[in-house]
Amino acid sequence: MDGFADYESHDALGLAELVRGGAADARELLEAAIARAEAHNPKINAICVRMYDQAEAAIDAGLPDGPLRGVPFLLKNLHAPYAGAPLTNGSRLFEGFVPDHDGELVRRYKRAGLVIFGRTNSPELGLSYTTEPSLYGPTRNPWNLDRVAGGSSGGSAAAVAARIVPAAHGSDGGGSIRVPASCCGLFGLKPTRARTPAGPAAGESWAGMSGAHAITLTVRDSAALLDAAAGPDAGDPYWAPRPARPFLDEVGVDPGRLRIAFSARTPNEVPVAADCIAAMEHAAQLCRDLGHDIEEAEPTYENQAMGRAFLTVIATHVRADTVRRAAELGRAAAPEDVERMTWALARMGREVSGAAYVDAIHAIHRVGRQVARFFVDYDVLLTPTMAQPPIAIGALDPMTEDAESYIAELKGFAAFPPLSNVTGAPAMSVPLFWNADGLPIGAQFIGRLGGEATLLSLAAQLEEAAPWADRRPELAA
Image 1 (cartoon, helix red, strand yellow):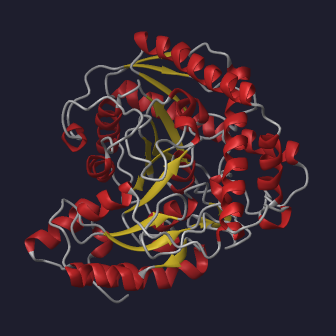
Image 2 (image 1 turned 90 degrees about the vertical axis):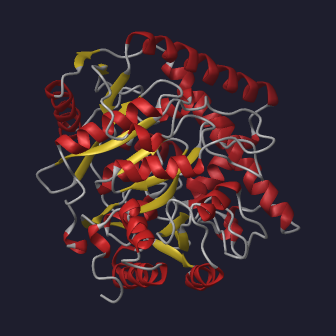
Image 3 (image 1 turned 180 degrees about the vertical axis):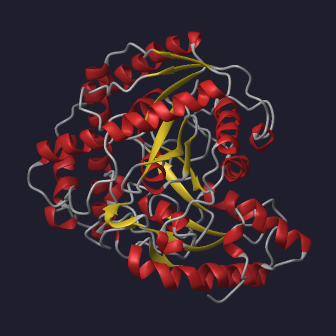
């Protein structure tokens, strides 16, 4: 491929070091990333909006001297405004929407020196654990093109797995970073609630359940990107506890002897595939070998109330999003504007009273307090990331008319991640296991609220003991 020949041998920090040392320049790296995008995207459909002109213009204007200067980067096509670039949120309803400003997160990425050259595919409004929007078509898993890449940050995960970029932006409201990281054999960290900014358009997303960060090839890239993005924006309604030191400084630090609980029981009692249990057990044994204390235990909380509240919050926000966008277009929202499942959620949200919404928020906060008590005795909770390995493309159809079955199938695919969204706690999917079919299956680690430092130091320890960055799908070999 054209461009910098050694491109795929480096993570994001490695590429930035080459630029700083003069061994490569930003334009060479951009050309390398674009060459790989043009070669691989026809097969995996990871990138849905090209922003090549904007990237070249940013380089010509002079990049900031940030820690990731010159590194090619991709934005998820969901709630991350970039002035002058389309933002459709995976939906026909948002076709033609071009923000006139950068979101605060994008501003911080630009200040870090990242070269943003495209948007990655996302399901409509981020509402699925697979990335198969009617608007752009399915994103395919580079490890097996017949399987899903996960969602909702599936385009970002597929792009990193295919080595188009070493890291890409994602967001996570119910597992949307961790699920695709698991499906694509990558590291995915959901930060503590309000760790990264949602503004200026909003102070929070999905009542604080959703937050933005990245899917990365290495742990240190995740830490560096979090350092670049973290911290409150002016006027934020609340923010995460300040870290004791930069997150990158936690990579390589001995986490000490951690008390790690593990459980493969799903909150909604759906069955868990043997491969997903095996991935958790493999991670547990690796933690034992590293000297951590491991025992089977799980938090006690109102899981049914949590499930109802989780769905209530999402449905009401979907309703608000569709009504707001239709009003911008000068008309009422109609079923043909969105996929059937999106419309079903919007109708569900329309029926929620103000009192019912407040009750849902109270339930979410109550569960957060219940789970926090568990972390008095344990540092980390280990579970499978997924209840099933990556499923076939088309198995979850957003155009189905059977909303009840669709939601049940969603829960059966990824039952574990929403707990940390509800509680606000940080959580990560770590790629330590591949099944007999060659599909990656992640292990999820949940930490205390504000405890990214513990997770990152543990992740780096696991990465050193069982490296994964050199494992790549045949597509990218």
